[in-house]
Image (cartoon, rainbow, N blue to C red; front, side):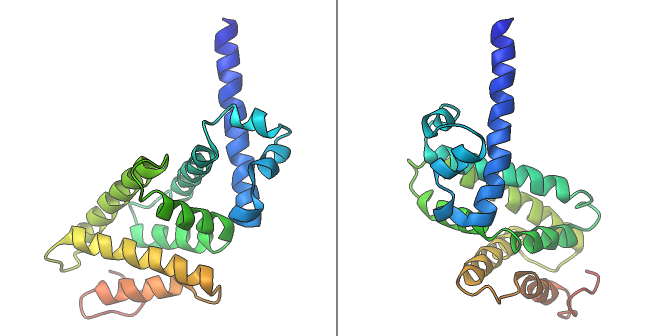
Length: 194
């Protein structure tokens, strides 16, 4: 029985670490969010923090998983209006530049199949593409290949994040709304129903 309690405490501590780390990374960015800084935020030593994760890379990957989990909760109702839900997430990203920076940096590093985040990014990309493909089909957007349109939406979104990191005056959501409008029959105005 003691093991179960210890296991539950370990899971709870790991969740606390990830929740606090989201805040630290979101505010301070990747460079300001060292393992030391995150450990201090949860009252642990660096070694104590890494007891819960195999490496710094795994910690940062799990921070992104936690962010995805929270984004899904805030995207409730996505089935009714997937475009609006997607834009809500993009708008939220503009409020947490450190997490966008972490995502972008880790995505590049994870191109190496040996990187701890490689499988995370492959799985995340495939799941997002499946959701976007289903949305494209449901919206009636005339497309010979709905999955190709889904890849374009991913590419535009990822590219906008990089542009925004370089120039925070870029309005990612407004630009994405313009792109969505181009996909509608006749290139309807942004905000018009699909």
